[in-house]
Amino acid sequence: MTRDGRESDRTPPPPRLTKASRWWRSDRGSAAVEVTLLTPVLIMLLVFVAVVIHRGVTARLRLDDAAHQAARAASIERSAADARTAARTAVTGALGSGDVVCRSPRVDVDTTGLTAGGAVTATVTCTLDLGDALVGVPTRTLSASATEVVDTWRAADTTDTTGDSR
Image (cartoon, rainbow, N blue to C red; front, side):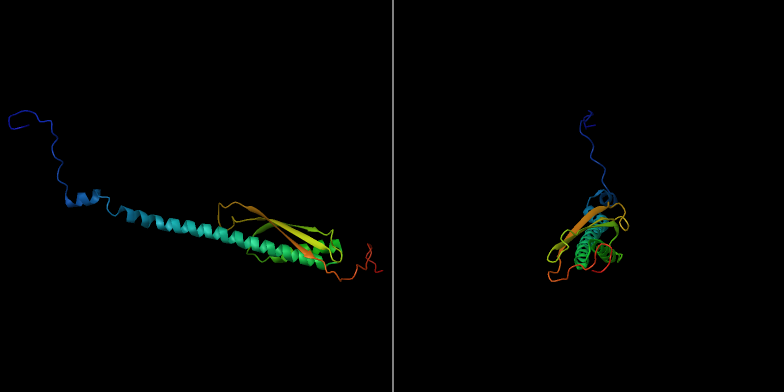
């Protein structure tokens, strides 16, 4: 009401806020709290990504090394069957160290060039399991190939198909 008795259309002023209620309603410092709460989550996410990348790179390097070892082992052998066996043994040894979880590695050896001066190619394929330590990460199939030259001056194979010496 006004002094002359009429109704006023003005709204009354808001009640005075106490110091505590002003502090409680203020947004001051909220960014610092949000950053403090989100920082550990972001750091854990970065560590997770770094671990996945590291394991993928390590697996790729191991697989390349296994392919090179398989090709080298196959190029030293005299027969195609021995070359395949040597390549599989080399891959099992290279990937068997335990730091790369490779499900059922497959070794394909091209022995068509297993003659003096020829070349042998080994291809290693495996399914990389990243979910053993990091739940929720899908598996990934990796493949690596390597070619080794067969020694030009090596002696010819002196056994026939029955295994007898000529």
